[in-house]
Image (cartoon, rainbow, N blue to C red; front, side, top):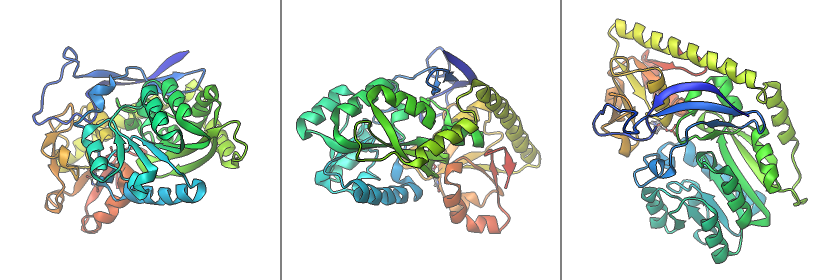
Length: 396
Ligand code: TMP
């Protein structure tokens, strides 16, 4: 049975930055209802309303993996691990974005899949073989015909963005060699619940995996998780190493059972846990609004730092407008001088002088907290403060 536990109200597409603030309406399909569900059978957490893929991932997709320092560094480290542990003859990346990971591999060993044309163009221009297509069986067959099979398939923050999970894993299983390895990484449901990071929910994040749910789903395809790593990226992610059950060369590590036990201890398999989460989310909203209103009552300028996709969920759920946050700064060129979806808050190009206009920055990109605190050492030294809502709204 699939049960609802959270309603984050009407929301726009999280990455649809507009040049002019526009009054969005349900009638024109500008808004959708963001409701989050729990499947009591598979234990999978998912969004109720799934937005058609072409509306989300197209030639205007603004997110670039290479825009932070954190992600390219993490990818460099990972590519070394993959080479050492699995030494792939062919590596396929599903959702290769601007090539932040794949550029660490030889061009003749790599295949990129990236449906967003603007991003696919970047890896193509770097000389990488790139299919500008959505991941599905048709493409998997095409790749198998051309390359026979693939020994490593890697996908970060992509699998959970694709509605038909059954098709995703079937197509992966079709092209993966018998002793091949699938590596996926996505935000961790356990971390989301612990941090009350309800902003992990937005239209692109159709699913939020726990190891419990993923193990249940993989069974159907005779696949299993054989190793798990905890990552700091995207607010706390898990990297799953997956193999065919019949492949006995790779042993299932103790870490897999440990993670599943940890999730069970936190009762991720019980619906009641999600109802408690819902209460925490409501409290988080009230507290954040109070902090912003208090600061505004003493005429403070508040600047948002990092217009992440998550920010769209927060601002629209908490009904925060430019009376509470004056503007955002962000390093992504495509977001410059555009408005955070569903709001009248403009995003300006990151500039130290802008930051220094204020003593209070709202940490939109909380998932890059360490990198940002390092970068803004001076601001902090001179008494500047950050407002964060993770794990509960406070000024730090
Ligand atoms: P994400 O959390 O959806 O991956 O987006 C991160 C956003 O934060 C992206 O738009 C870039 C922005 N950002 C900054 O503006 N400055 C920074 O120092 C960092 C790390 C990220």
